[in-house]
Length: 114
Image 1 (cartoon, helix red, strand yellow):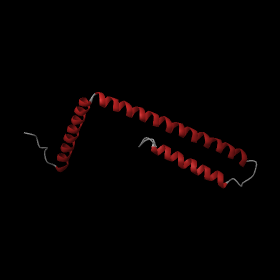
Image 2: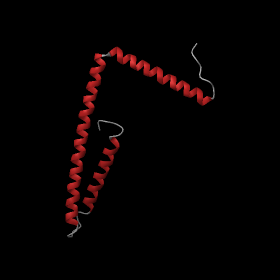
Image 3: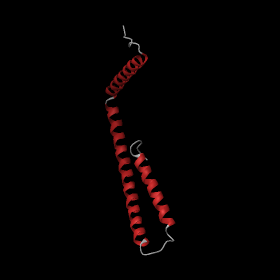
Image 4: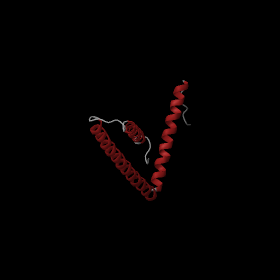
């Protein structure tokens, strides 16, 4: 999968569901009767539709991720000093917050820079 986090879990769940459905269809293939044939056909069609939707979703996420990566790369190349400044500021703020939380966890006052 192209994206991590939020997209991987639903896609994995969908794959498990598809695999389980295929296994169920294979196990009931030998079953005959008037009630099984329409139900099997409906489940097979739903499975095909779900797989097609999953493939479309995966493709669109891949296209969007690539576009976002290209846009980010273009911005960084056009504004390197602005990006460096923002990264340095973010690092300073994160470091300050971590130092403050460690000081409050230990019960000691945060050290000030003199």
